[in-house]
Length: 282
Image (cartoon, rainbow, N blue to C red; front, top):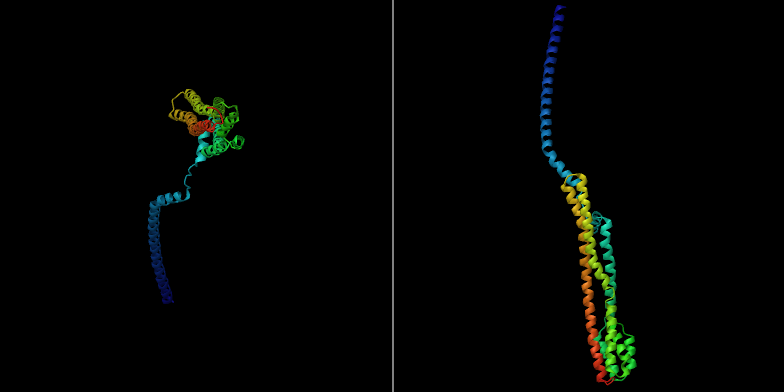
């Protein structure tokens, strides 16, 4: 019985020893695994810390939309609002009215323009043939100041005096010049008025800027720069309007000068034609 008890105690002691050895080995393995995992986590954290800013910047660049640039019309609208609709509207009105007058004059002048040489040749052919009434009918059916002047000269050719024809041509030529220059006075007014309105807006804007400085009690660069920028926008608008209208004005005056030169040459040709064919007495 004692032997059996001793054997059982020995077996229990061996079993407990083996379990202790395996438990200690397991604890060592767990500690090593935890240490290895900690090292891996630290390395991963360092890598993330190093690469995170670059990745974040790339992500922001990819996700953040690029700032859109204002188109021409949007930029003009923005500047128009910054300059103050009340003052910016005045040069704009001058531009609209001036362009309306300029376009109307250009269309009228091109409509009045004819082939003067061809017209004079037709009239001379009829005058040489003695068909004064036919020549007058051609003048009535032809547009432009040259035809009107020819009609007035031929209509008074039956009076038999070249002086009467010349006076009629000169007088009616002055009337036609007045019609050609119709509206140019208003166009020149808008050219002069637009910069003045711009300057007035600038002066009033500067007064507002100084009032803001006085109210703030300090000369702030932001207040001064902002007020001056807004004030100068009206001047820029007035100058742009004046430049645009001045280009149209010069084009119209050059076209009028061309038509007037044709009128003078045609008038001389008419007088010579009537004297040469003895329609009137020289």
